[in-house]
Image (cartoon, rainbow, N blue to C red; front, top):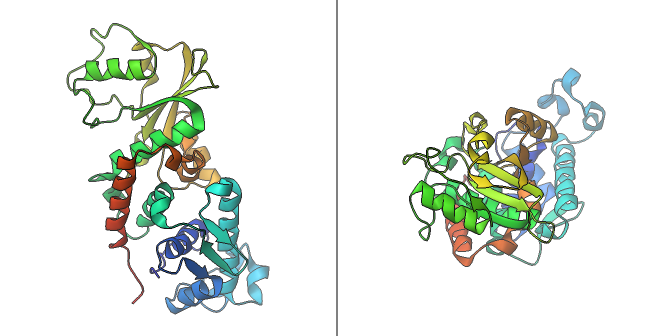
Amino acid sequence: MFRPPSADLSDYTHYANWVEACTLFSGTGFTSKSKAADVLRDEGIIGSRADDFFEVDANPLEDSFSDEDSAGTFLEEVWQTHQQRRLTLKRLYPFLLTHQDLRLSDTNWKEVPTYSTLLLADLWRMYHKPETLATETFPVLFEKIVEASKKGLLGGAVVRFGHPPDENWPTGINERIQLLGELMSLKTESLEGKTAAADNDRGLDVAGRLGFGDDGAGTIVVLTQCATGKHWRKKTGEPSLSQWRNIFQWDAKLIRGVAIPWSLSPEERIRTHHTFDDAVVFDRFRLLYGDPDAHLTETVREEMIEWCTARLSELPSLS
C-alpha cells in the first residue's frame, strides 16, 4: 500500500483518493476498510479516540466518534465519499463498493487511463509540490484529456488549441487560427492587426461546441483554459472573450471555461466559478463524467500509461 497523505482529516477526499490508489494500482485490486484503518493508526494519523485529532468543540461528528474506534468511524466517512463518486459516475466508476471493502471491477488501471491519470494527479499534490505537475508532459496531456472529455460532454466539435501544438499542426498563429476555424466549421475574420508572431495559444487550450446533434450555429461555444500547478488560480483572465470574439464569425454564445485536474468541493467550485469570472468549472469528476476514455486516440492512451507508470514509482510506499 501507499503511505497515506498528511491531509486535513476534515477533508475526506484525499483519503478516498488514497484508498482508490491502493486499490487501483495494487496487485490485489482490493482494499478493506479494516486494513485502511490499521494503516491510519499505525502511521499515527488517527488515534484511538476522536479527541486525538479533533478538538471536541470543533468536531462536527463528536457524537458518532465518542464511543467508537476513531479510525473505523473516520473510514465510514471516507466510504461515503466513494459512494458519492459511484453515484455520480455510475458505470464509469471503476470500483465495486461494499460496506467493508473497495474492489477493482473487472479491469485494470491501464484500461481506465483517464481515471488513473487524474487520480494520480489529485493524489500527487499531497506528496509533492503541486507545481511539479506543470512541468514536462502533464500540461499538454491534461489538455488532451479535456479535449476527449468535452467530446462526450458537449457532443459537438471539440479542438485542442493549446501550445505547443501537435506535430500535424502549423506553427504560425494565423495558420493555426485558420485550421481551428476549419475544424470548428467557423468562418475566419480578417486577422490583420489582431495577432502577433509571439502569440502562442492566446490563452485558449480547448474550444468546444454544444452540439445538440447537428453541431450547427445558434448554440454555445466553450473556450477553456486548462489550469495546472501551484498557481492555477491566477489564470483568471484566460482566455479573453474580447480577444477571440472578432476572430471568427461564431454565430454562437461564447462562454469561458476552466479545467482543473483534481476534484473540487462544492464550495471550491463556487469560488472557482467567481474567481474565473463566471466560467464553467470542469474539475476531475466532471471531466470523468464525459467518458474521455471513449474519445482518446491510442497514442494519447499510451502517453497516459507512460506518465502514470513514472508517477507510481515516485509515490511513497509503506515500509
